[in-house]
Image (cartoon, rainbow, N blue to C red; front, side, top):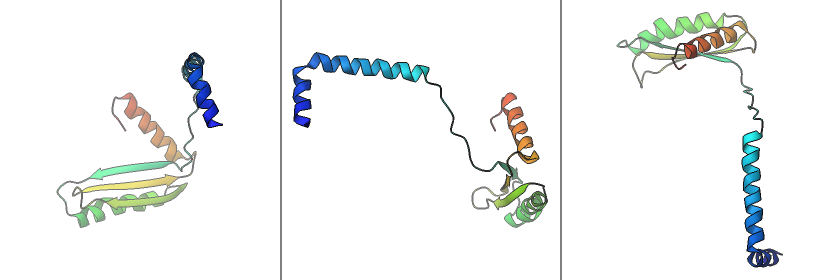
Length: 125
């Protein structure tokens, strides 16, 4: 079967060229005119809080920054998970706090407004 296809293509080069050209123009037309649909993000809404207190010991940063932030975020309504993490080996005094919330909650709304204001102000989030 494959031998017959190869033989046909070898005998009818112009038809193969015409078919490839037609397929190329069809693909270009489709690429330009197809409506793209974004893949939805199905993960829970997250807010990430970066804090830094340079030149301080990791224990002090953990006790004075990370723990109070995590403790207060746990009590927020519609919060499903809070993770606090101090990056003591990378940069001394840098912490990350991640807050997962229920979709449609006030936490998500505030985070989206803050992101929009940063982008509008010319700063990357």
